[in-house]
Length: 368
Image (cartoon, rainbow, N blue to C red):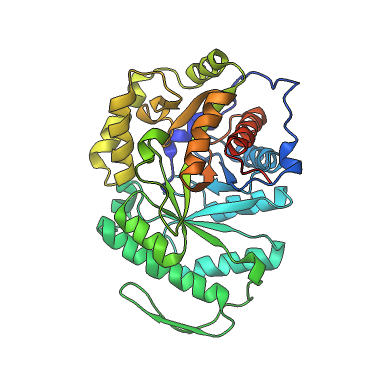
């Protein structure tokens, strides 16, 4: 999964409808759901330093209160260092886990393992690692990374393998590969076993799926409508997840009114998206664009205007609690158990999403 400069606007505060006081949002405290939910941290682009750190703390606390397992922290050339943002998150919460985007071009795998071990030593907090094989084309050109798409995943496998071996072994590690070599390298301080990080990899291409299989990672996709995914359920033997935004209310019209207000028509954004398409080699980007061309004129639960107009890089599910829960339940039935939500505009939006997930898992009898 890539970072998303486009989603900055979706991370700023908006007016939204307040929660229905009759809605019970305490279910997450009483019931265990068979899904993991991650929110997404705001990006530094567009904030000054004081307001950005304050917004990161707010979103992290909202996410923890709403029962999220973790929070995705983006990386690219235009953003502040995700490890420092992750430190703010850890120091502002009790158990929320940063899902840190890792770009192999930026640092050696030993440095990543050292950061994970250091977080474990200082905070006893588990981290998740979102392994980024690609990136914005201009970022890679500026870094003189001319590695072809599939070769980037070969490099990613070596990179993540070294990280995993360093964090799981008390003995020195030796590794000789096509891209990396280490000899008798030991991780100090050692990482407690219970803090070993889970790895996420984009699962939209064959190369990404192969990497996820070899690493035992969660394969994350930017999904098409659930009805189109039924012919290809989540991959056998792989932990699977999707990246999606949610706008849900008790009333269908209210949900769409909020969606239209948050993501109005924007010709400039549409042109920016079209330009990005011309220089992108990301398979998921092309897949979503093809789906957008088919669904643009229809008002369905599955909505791609924010993606088409360069406001975010994931589809949205919009509608009543019932219709959005129906769509989510179909993804869950297909085997997707990890959901990474878009940047929340406020805490209410996370609570509405939380209520929808409760309904979705209840529909297919998975609440325990």
